[in-house]
Image 1 (tube, rainbow, N blue to C red):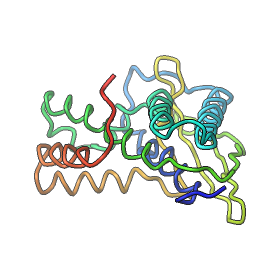
Image 2 (cartoon, rainbow, N blue to C red; image 1 turned 90 degrees about the vertical axis):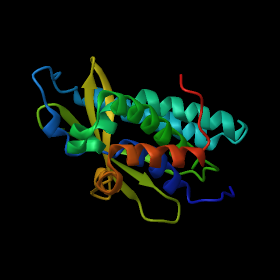
Image 3 (cartoon, rainbow, N blue to C red; image 1 turned 180 degrees about the vertical axis):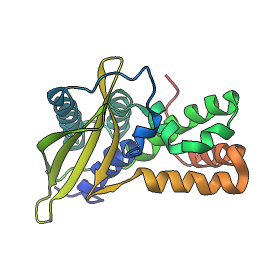
Length: 217
């Protein structure tokens, strides 16, 4: 099947980069932390999300805008975008006022959903395989997986899953042992160093003007 971009890069960008923002999660623990999610629940959550995402990528009978809308819904339901946004800000969160934080989370969620859902396109038939699960820290489970590419090397991924209100949510992904949190956090940190939280908000607004953004739900 002919496609415009390597499908595995779309999948990793749309799923992994959105969620892969937080291996340093241990620093955010509090007295209200929920117990660690069961390994089978974490594995099932990742597998179900991957199956749904790959189903969208495969189905070229559905218009692209409808696929993107469905993909955004999957991301919103499968990941904890607010937690990811907080971890991206890291210690810079202390600089933000409540009003700035509210706008940041609104912009960040739209930015993530728009930026990575637009990377969708044709799907060439990659396979997603879960290899094993591992307990990680007091709260998290790592779901180790592999994306098999026809004619190319397999891509290893590790999905970090945590319970929120009893439901599993993806909060980070490492691709080939590299967590994407560092790049995103450094990018935002550099903007904040130059222009503060207001500078980051302005950067997000500017980037959103260039991306297809759905109406907030």
